[in-house]
Length: 188
Image (tube, rainbow, N blue to C red; front, side, top):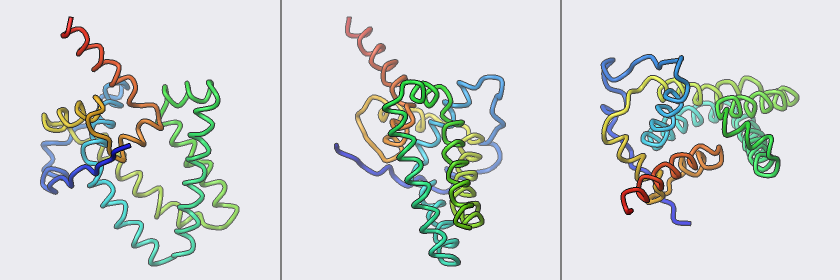
């Protein structure tokens, strides 16, 4: 599989003035989910850079705890994705409620880390960056370039790390099917 990294978006585009941020419409969960997925795909390298900075700070303060936390979250996520691929009930839940699925992974990771005493590292090193990313992705309005890049990614013309994660969370298939339907209807 060919994978390419998305470009680092300019910081003035990533975090401009308040005019490019708006409260999401919580009554329309599909639209909110679409905004979050679009922003996660478009700003993925910026999000990765922010998360790495926080990981490095927390990792410098508590290297073993950060390693343990990262390992536990990775194993729980991998186990959850495996279970989602092998159990129809979990796959359906994952597709319909991706946010709850990720929250479930984080709660399970929190519980396992509490057994090892690594809760503070988990909160500041793993949960805090994810919270920052989710808040930004929820509040940041999309622009035309964002929408175009996401259509290219959704059509399968480009494969990026966030695209792979979205595939694992079953958030891409619907978009690809819609794009395929549009292309097929125009070819007829």
